[in-house]
Image 1: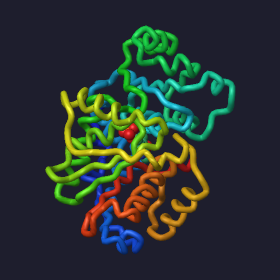
Image 2: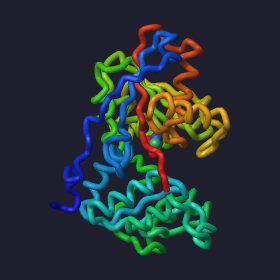
Image 3: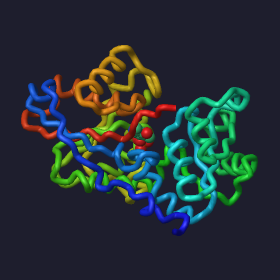
Image 4: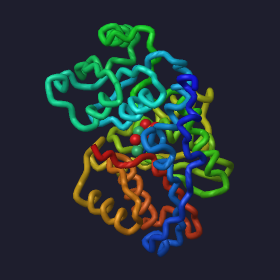
Length: 300
Ligand SMILES: *Cc1c(COP(=O)(O)O)cnc(C)c1O
């Protein structure tokens, strides 16, 4: 097999669509289906498959360099892809101080999958979009000439890859909810949906900057705005990786009711938000609501 023959990894595509029987939504006349992207591949999980696959093909055997924080799902997925496809990978990790500490379970998994880690201080990390700063990082990491995938994996190729998620949901739902980090998945999803379908993004980061990001990603991927989408910024619980007892209790209860494991950084906030919106009456009776399960919990 060629080093970038992703079909050899046997992704489960289209991902399954499962009915969710939950009286809290049922009482409000809303039917819910789960779009199980978490079942696409056990290691290249969820939206990370959709975003990475076209980039791995474009890397064409070159070393892949990408960026993330200490618990990044994207870094782990990239490292796993490297192992499965025989590609070298380098992870640029936010936080110089982490270099002197024992690796956490997420970074340890990256290393076990063959990823070389390169730690940079936070101010350099923040400026990695500037060409000279990026060149400096690649030089220091010994990765000149590598194929660079941006933080969170969101570039034009990734967004075009996520269009297939929308395509798989055509005719299957009125509203499709997805949790957002960079917004790349939402940008592609919205572009792939059919006429009359709407995508709802639930940002897990605080800041209110995401709508501009999504517009920018759509213009990089498609040359302009696509689809019908909106954001609800109320469900980040203080920001990335922040939580609250109420959110944890909600997620644990959801797992118990439905036998579906709930990833806490993104998926828990999406599901919480969709229930809150439903109970507020945001969706008319008869609405079919699809919730995208973009990932699975990491067990360390
Ligand atoms: C990375 C990730 C997201 C965020 O995707 P974006 O395209 O960056 O918005 C959502 N859910 C899960 C489980 C993720 O790992």
